[in-house]
Length: 157
Image 1 (spheres, rainbow, N blue to C red):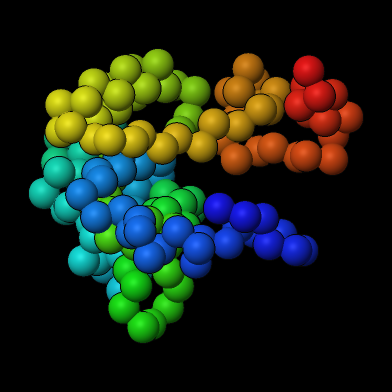
Image 2 (cartoon, rainbow, N blue to C red):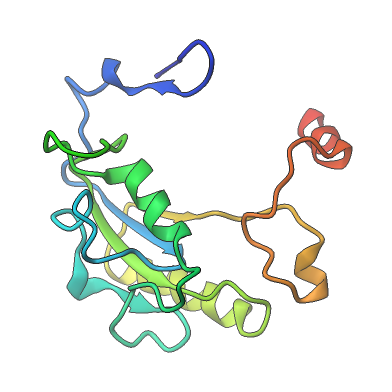
């Protein structure tokens, strides 16, 4: 894929040969909206789980649980002539829900990875952040600020 001037990636160049068909992506995040029209046909609802106890689920729980759906759209929104199109628009999505909070996070991580392997996921996506909020118990995921000197300096090494 080639960077697009002004930002983004040019996925059009790979679509003639690669659509994501046959690829299973587990998304360890805040759930995926099962009724989203750009995702519903690619979402393996029966495989969705709650990372805390591995019970059936995978849908967002809180009103603020929107990030998993956004990530799913970037990766595998359907190419159906409506809405957006994901990079791998024919991939299958497995949602592994977590509230992404410090309490219970080690358990959720272990459960999510083991479950993703058990359902033969080809890819597991998790949006880890680089943030000091983790150590203070704040909701820390997706907290990155790429303008912070500390983060820029880490990237140079």
